[in-house]
Structure formats: C-alpha cells, structure tokens
Image (cartoon, rainbow, N blue to C red; front, side, top):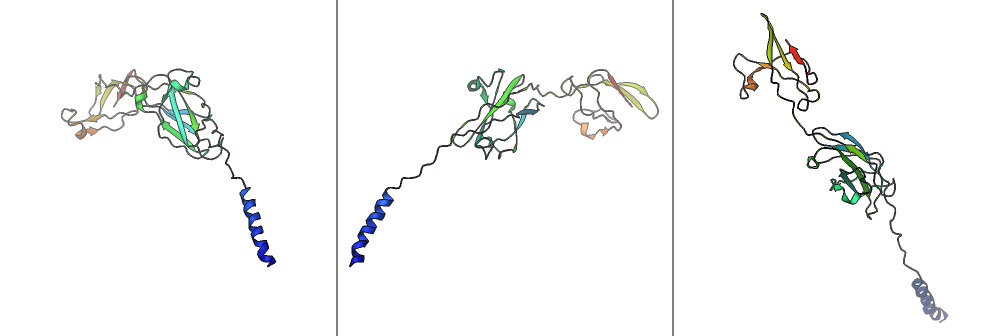
Length: 215
C-alpha cells in the first residue's frame, strides 16, 4: 500500500522536472569568409581576360564558401563604388578552402582598361570585404595581316628565293607563330590551297617589319 501511494508523487515530480527544461538555441552564423588577397590576371589574349585566385572558406579560411561575386569596372575605385560595378560571375561555385579558382570574363565585356575584384559569401549571405583589385587591358583579337609583297629574289636550277614583309601576330603588331608556304605547278587559289604542296625549311616569323628572305 505504501508503494502505491508513492507512485503518483514520483510521476508528478518527474513531469515537473521535464517541464522546467528550456529548448536549446543555435547561435546565428555571423562570421564571413576571408577576403581573397591573391586575385591575378593569368591571360588576356584573344580579347578575353582570365583571372585566377585561391578559394577562401565559409568562416574565415575554414570550410567552403557558397558563392562568388566577381565584378569589373572602368573606374579604378571599384571597391568604393562596388554597387555600380558590373557583375560577370553568375553561377560560379567555390572550391573548398585553398582550392585553385579561375574564371574567363565573357568577350561581351569588351576591350580596353578594366579593373577587376571579387567578394565571397557563405550560405548565410555573410559577405567578405572586396578582394585586391587587378587591372587588365585586353586588345581585340585580330589575325595576322595578309602578306602583300611576296616576291622572287633569286632563282637557281634547284632553288627559288623569296622575300616578303613579316606581318604581326595581331594585325601588324607582335610576332606571328608560323608560316604555311606552299607551291604548285598551277595557279594557287583559295579553293585549291589544300592541294598545294607545303614547302619545307620555312623560317620562323620575325616581328612585323623588314622583308623576310626564304629559299
């Protein structure tokens, strides 16, 4: 009988104790990713700029961030005028902290001097400060100029010497990569170029300028 009388009291004390517990709360994520400090231009050929950097983390340098905001501006003060800079990195997913990142700006951004920087965000949309700013000045992609003065400079029983003015790699600027000199017993045209015989021993191009002899 005494056991039966104590049982309801024990249950009552248990329920009262459980009711006093408070639910646990999770502290909000307020730590932003560390800013990128090694943004650099690795290529600006063919009118297109490619930049690279090392990924930072979700909190400082730890973990994995959620998104990038890469922008460019014609104004050197891009950090102070961030909201007016143009966004170019839609959908770029960060690598884990320390990973190698790269991105090619679309050719639609045009050519000429530009200033590029980025920010990093975590899943809670805590944004890092603006990265270091890099500059690029891509030129339009132009093929080498057409050789207009190919001419004979000497003939022997076994050789033909030719001269021409070297074009550049970009119009008349720079140095081209190679020549494709061909010969045929019939007139060479655009239509039959592929059937003409490639010449051997053709010299490497010089920078645009003086005549280039070949034998």
